[in-house]
Image 1 (cartoon, rainbow, N blue to C red):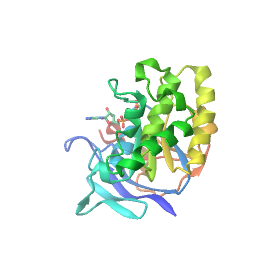
Image 2 (image 1 turned 90 degrees about the horizontal axis):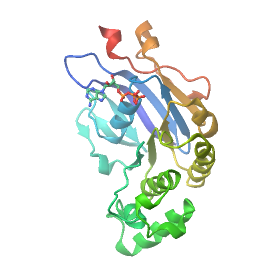
Image 3 (image 1 turned 120 degrees about the horizontal axis):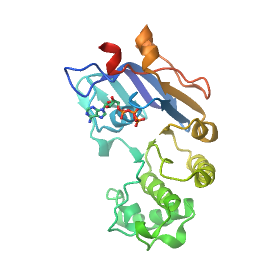
Image 4 (image 1 turned 30 degrees about the vertical axis):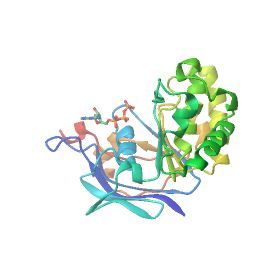
Length: 244
Ligand SMILES: Nc1ncnc2c1ncn2[C@@H]1O[C@H](COP(=O)(O)OP(=O)(O)OP(=O)(O)O)[C@@H](O)[C@H]1O
């Protein structure tokens, strides 16, 4: 089953400047983990923002788990897309305990199911004893695991991670990568991970794509592609300079 189907997606932050993403098509199968690589400014975060509904494309369609969330006359709000996000800075609420952070996104779940779900998520990330702590009482790696638990708690169909390791030191990164892979596979999660670090892709991802403005400049924009085995990622997206 396809969890993500993107057709001919285009987007620019302003009408007067060249698009950041142009005629981009892409599919992702259930349970697949794909790395999104590419130089700074190539549009990696923008792609995640479009999929999650934080930006509206100028053209194209996006389906998530067979449901059209972006189309000619359709724009489904972020909270209705079934997409979880983990950001670079984890974005945990500082004034809320760990368990409150995790249950934050569970308002649509029946009240009696929320507590067991929070417990289940704490178990999944092996932090059962940390539920009553505040984020500032946790290490960077622990905060990262809680951010992951929070994103997974509402049972998203797709998980988007934007540079999830960039705040961790090198030693911690290695162990967290292994943990993350095991958690994602246990949850059979379909996932896109934006990263600067090819080691993240080698350790975690089944496939990768590379946002490559240069190739777009050479006329590759508009080419459709599936994800390729890691190491053979291809282009996407044009950038501003290519249109100047
Ligand atoms: N809110 C915004 N308004 C205008 N331009 C923006 C906005 N956000 C990003 N951009 C521009 O869009 C382009 C793509 O940005 P994006 O953040 O998607 O790149 P990225 O590949 O994720 O970069 P990095 O690896 O540095 O995080 C850049 O040229 C950036 O300056």
